Image (cartoon, rainbow, N blue to C red; front, side, top):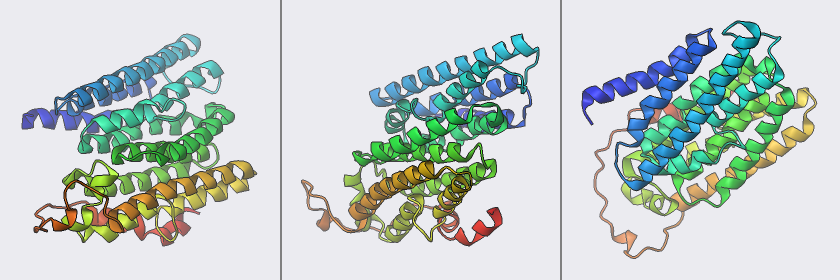
Length: 344
């Protein structure tokens, strides 16, 4: 693709969420969401093949539907209140429609079915954008209006998302689908604490983005698209083995990694608000997530899957690949648990 075209596309992708975050008018927020949607489509279709075309079409249809619901809710509110901002007097129907549209954009359950399929069909770098930066704008809107949304709706969506993210990832062999179900589970954790302590939602989002960036920094250079191909990491880049293990354990929430901090703080806050059953359910689901992360570690460092050719005979060549973001994201993603006292 033309470098100038790429520059315009990435600038639009960056500026779309910024417009949404800095706007007080929900009409301008909708414009920011549309900028984000339309700019990422060419990146999805950059490698022209049937799978990427199918993923781009699915993404466009689902996100356009969500944008239509969002705009309809904004117009209903303007008709009722005469304002482009939501007020405490805004009807529950309007706020529920807004939450449904943002749930579709975030991939929250039960509107999650598009996310694993789209993530699997697009390149790694675009998948990284889809699972990280594309979540910022809808989460920003939710952060502003959560007080007007029914708490039971938020909690129900959170529990279902955490369970779907855990169970859905168990049977997957494709790394991008595993990361998509991981995203669904993490979004559920963020939404669960939103009515009680929104600051923890922001902390969880930042840590999730750091961990996902670190994982994709390892998967992308070698195109590790499945568990089977990851079994060759020991031969291609042995130094990445312990790094991959640390990042995956941190993403699963195993102490004393950084990924344990948001889960610990969220469960503590839920218990303070007498949500014992919800906290227990989410903790059990986190163990299921940790299982398939551990399975990735096992296949990466402890076993060699049976293949047609003998992988032991591969000649290890010096790697010339550059990892600019990997050192900083691994340090931030594994060693910052002591900073959790600042968030209490």
